[in-house]
Length: 375
Image (cartoon, rainbow, N blue to C red; front, side):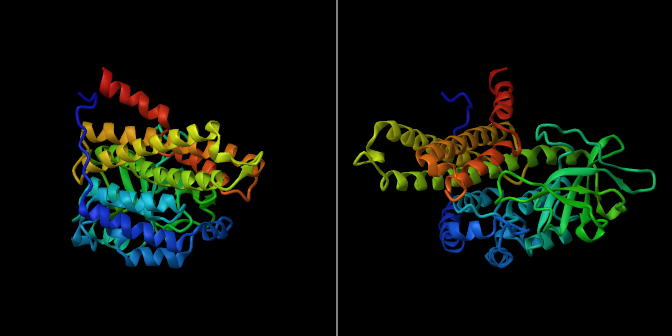
């Protein structure tokens, strides 16, 4: 009997189709040379590539048809994000998906139809969630003053440099609430880019002080708290899917090197000291993918239940630790070259460090799993 009690694992025809299309698209459009070409650019990705992804319908996969989406549910985003992780492709897809899910779950498709339609049409969006660098801290200091003006800033707002819409999590009359803020409402100098260890990603500190809050862009009520809980779990799941893809690519890169590099007249891949860790990565990768798609089988447009929470937390813990181990071995197995910027192992280990922190690291999730499974 499983300790989780639920071992559902389903892989729909739609997910299989999306995974095949996404892998081919990312393989063609995002080779490692293209990834490296955008490491030093302001956005970290090719804007025309984002337009192509929007034209494929990816920005609205999880959104209702009434909002211009495909109505396929958030689970169908998982194979697309996994394929993007394999290609190390950084775009606002994850940020926009999470922003849309937060609005959809907190207010519903009807009240948010205009905003969600924009997101489905390709307007990049982002959730302004963190008050500090701790992804497990849900403290809210950002608030609305007596004059209806926002006061406060948010840390590590993903894709803030290209976002046209921000969903800001605030304290409103002692309870969590959401405010939608357009990039044009921000005062000059409000967005301060962060320097991240993972140069395929972008985030910034955004100061929302001075933005006027109107009734039309404020979301309040008990559903906001539930939506925020779901946001953190869905964020963990999507980062886990991306990390799983990146770990698979990292393993491919490492194995290719083991099959070509010779030392003492023998291929280094023939040594057991390198074979065994490679097999460990492969088995961990299979486990991570199983956890990710188990979680994808349980999440839906309804509030996430206990089983879905357990699955999302397990997926995040397993996938990010797998990427961390795979990237560490990639650096070591490449020898002296592995420590140089020119070696792709550096990109994987940097992504592992950042992905591990997003939406909580493995220790954070296992601590909560212990309470869910053992208490």
